Image 1: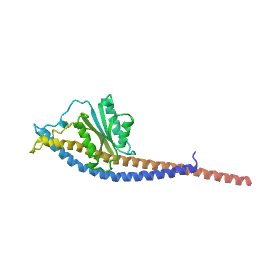
Image 2: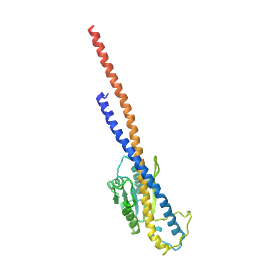
Image 3: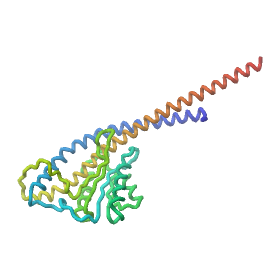
Image 4: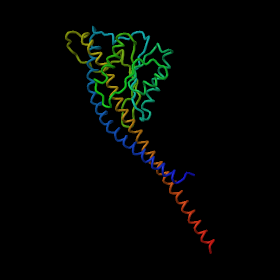
Amino acid sequence: MASLRDIKSRITSTKKTSQITKAMQMVSASKMARAETNAKAFVPYMEKIQEVVSSIALGSTDASHPMLVSRPVKKTGYLVITSDRGLAGAYNSNVIRLVHNQIKERHSSNDEFAIIAIGRIGRDFFQKRGFNVIEGITGIPDQPSFSDIKDIANKAVGMFSDGAYDELYLYYNHYVSAIQQDVTEKKVLPLTDLDSSAKLTSYEFEPSAEDILEVLLPQYAESLIYGALLDGKASEHAARMSAMKSATDNAKELINSLSLSYNRARQAAITQEITEIVGGAAALE
């Protein structure tokens, strides 16, 4: 049985750990509230640009663009959004597991795919296992602006246009609520999944529908990436908040258990001392 000093030391260290996890939980809750607001504020823009793109691409018979056309797939691009730090429960592992399984199912060699990793956790995982990581981006702020990822989003879209890969998939955690984040796979390019059932609005084009699509489609694809990043950041903070809450609760349970053991051990020691005193006094009589 552990000594009183050992138990007391464990209680003290566990209390200090619980204070840290409690502070991290509160910080993550604050960041999550802002990130959730940012993600929801971006939704109306995404819905409107999707409506405009769908109306032009599906409503005009003479409008065409390479980003709207499927081509034979020789190489697939994977854009994976994870975090730079851990302590977020299964936030990173769920995304990484899905991407890893999909690559194993679809491809037999590194020449058939390329990975763009946003976040240190995902980048390090795939690099250490020898996967073809062509870009690794770290240091994205907790509340990112479009300028923070403009270059990589532009590059990801540009590589499709240049033929570096023939399709691009996006993997991230979709924020549902503070306690639910769903791993999501979304096909970004080519843009063949436009909503044909949506209400199409009639537009007058100047100079032409093709010229407008030339500008609008890359912006739309980049917006899909940015929207996924906002969604992912809200999910990251929510996952870390939940993980830190669980850690704090577990620490409290451990402290209660150790306190009970400490009191029992102290009571046993006191009882032993009383017994020895009584026995010594009886021996003197």
